[in-house]
Length: 179
Image (cartoon, rainbow, N blue to C red; front, side):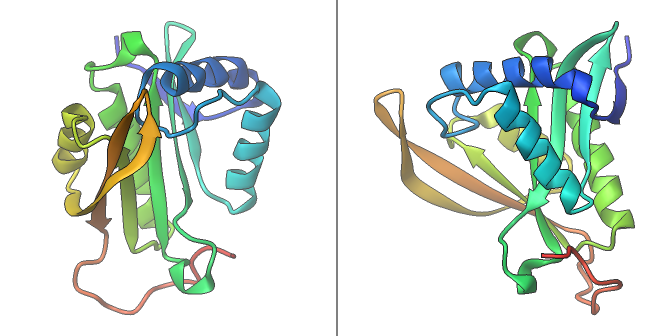
């Protein structure tokens, strides 16, 4: 089956909260140690939407199986053309092309918005699936923050990847994010 990708709605928040909680408790894509509750996830969604950035949900057979969103890279005006891309999938949705579909939908939206760079901060240099996913979407490695996170009784790297949407370096079109 092909998943439906759509803008996230409030009814998606219980499933989104559960997907993220699983990653907090069992994965290294986030360095949070305590899963946020549904109210906190609603606040995060509202924060992304307040900047007119997309937050998408992947749905398959009526069930939410993943989500992805763009968020500010940094909250300084000079960074207004650069956003961070985040993708989270339910365990049963991994390896099925759903993360790639979500990522591509966000890349397409970022281009339409006139953004310049997308950044991926991948928790754990051993997360070869996420690194490969980013590379397949055109991201290149921009660096590694070595042993910056302590989780699961070990130090974890952060791999930084970047996609340049306007590699010719021309001046930006539009105003970027309102930071």
